[in-house]
Image 1 (cartoon, rainbow over the protein chains, first blue to last red):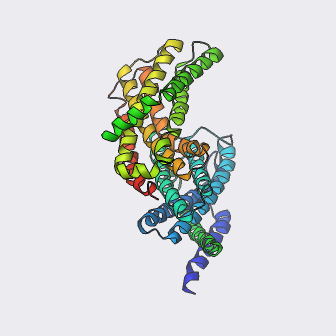
Image 2: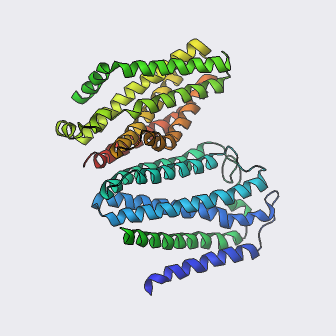
Image 3: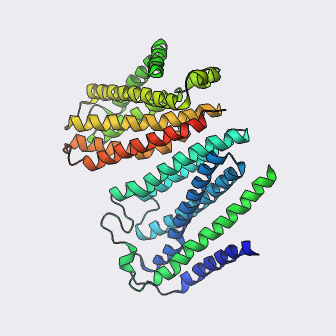
Length: 215
Length: 213
């Protein structure tokens, strides 16, 4: 019963953000117009992805410390969930980019960062599939996971701040804080982030248990 | 240190590898020359240079642990511990890749001219870039060799991880071509130095987990 509290909470928050995100009053902005509502769906995907990848990274470190295969199963389940969020974030972002910037794909540091992240974690899955021995597989892929996560943070967190971007808050573009005078957007955005992280954790834990049963 | 000498000796004995790399360099540069003529723009020159160095170093690193991870793996473990191995291997690859990028620069100067205005900055960028390349590639080729899988795996693992290093380095080199002074590029240089040191330290810490059975 206790364990299901966060699941119910996650579902409620996601349902709230999905429904109320369409109903709430949003600031009237040029170019972006009503598509500002995508903030709730698009940006929250990235927050959830980074949370999943960070948890996967943390479990990889703990695996190297303890040699406990359960940690490895957690790590891969969370990485798979993070991958799902990154694809969802990519698709919602592409729709938004078509509407506001006029193209599905632009040469923007954040988009490049996404592409790299997806390539890195696909390589991680390929690496896992190329080995049979469970312990060796876990150790080697944990090493790659740790290294890859650090590179990903450098690429999506540090480099974009050094170059111009079409995204808000970079290269002279105002961030969302300046659009949002009444904090109305935040009332939906933060619950959406928390809700998706909780639901992501839930699905990852289901996958983790499935893997434990398969082995 | 003894390991480093040993790696170099091994390389000299296997000199056909060095020759094949040189031949790759000449062949690819001439291919570009045939296709694009002798006057690429500055940014195209820089891009082509880095593409050639990129694939050259991938090829180079794919055989980085060829000797140590093969039938000699257990023997090698008795003569050197993992931490010494990774340091020696990284230094070896740094030297090798600096040599590769210098040679590429030289060959490009012959075929396409040398548009670099600030030579010192370009040189520093090349060295730091080669360092970052070799750190990433040493670790990923170690991983690829431990899986005993296909040779493609090393490239698959390394390519996305090389992008951050590649992006900063090529930005520095583009600035050197248009003639930005050393102090103006200090921000980018500092980032690259920090990145090189960070990933070097990370590779050093992680390698012992990789190098055991």
